[in-house]
Image 1 (cartoon, one colour):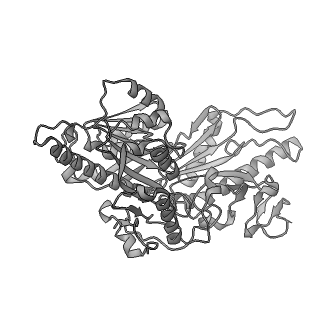
Image 2 (cartoon, helix red, strand yellow; image 1 turned 45 degrees about the vertical axis):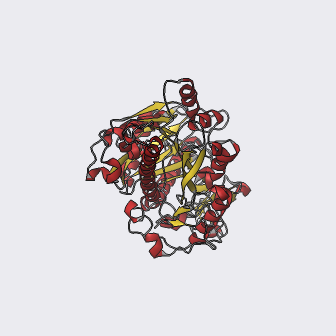
Image 3 (tube, helix red, strand yellow; image 1 turned 30 degrees about the vertical axis):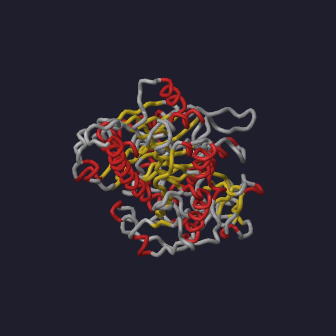
Length: 522
């Protein structure tokens, strides 16, 4: 059950039974009760550039969630609606993250910047090959790493399945296996180069590890995994050493072998100006989301033909682009959005009927004629989820690959009333503001901007809509747009919720439903 904490005198007591009941009809919990405790390891929830934003590890999950809710309530203050702030916990506090990215470092590259784990505490020694080792790791060995508080924190190579506890089971299983294979291939290539060139530091000629700077993982709950390798465009070589020619065909031989060995769904190499995909795999996964149908909201909509199967949304998710890393909480968010849209449509019909005083002669649009504009739509998750409620949907996304994913997801789910436009939100907003023939007064707009929030032009366009749904990964930007940039002068918050997509971190996603104030001009 959703908990309203706006007037609670103390922190909410999160119990397993209460969490299991959180909006059960939204299928958010999926039968898994949250586990108490911390996410262990460097930057427990984030890989790559987000690592230095990890939360205080002295707090357990429920304490940390309470603290995030407290901060959010304090930030919004009197702006919160009478229903308060609904809170939706993550069903999982480990193994919840289905998209991760890690830096890749060599054991002897970090200098003072690479922090060593407990397994690295032993004195240097020599192994059977005569190679110098640091604890259990060889010098020059590849390791996953995170950026944390300005330092590069290398993960414990030999913790195997617990390399990165937030990672999904499928990713956690692949991570150590991939690293071992990459190190074996890297070592073999370096040894061959040294023997043929009579030098102790020849050029790395391995197509997979040459110039390797980062590794990304994309998975679904079914267990499919796509691995992305970020490689330099050409070998890093010493002065006067010629670069070796690397062709896609050569890379593909090694890549296909790795895909088969680890049973990957796909392997991708991203180099400057080039993207190579192993010929025996793909660069995407498919995820199934189970979201409830709301019969009362859909019964009069003639633009789709809902059936029990429509509760399952199939999504194509592409590597190297944004996607929601926590699919369990994403399902909960999708259910909340459906319920909110249905409620908004119902409430506006009642208000319009009272305003006109005569049923059937409304001055406003009928609910079945209302349209939706979605900005920053990504791969179209919200578009697919909400399209049955609207006459038509216009989705806007700047990334061409995500636009292609949108079109694929429309086709996969039988969506015929939606289109996607490959434009920056600001450009779309400028055109929409200038086009006075497109009425927006009674339509919906949904925005899911980056942490910086909305630019002034987009904010002006968004403010012209009667109903706004604002999804914020940074609540400070949301409050700034609402209070400091004037959105509060025309709209009020009707419903608000916190979704804990990122357990163990300081981040929380806040979603609000805004409705134009009756005393504000259209």
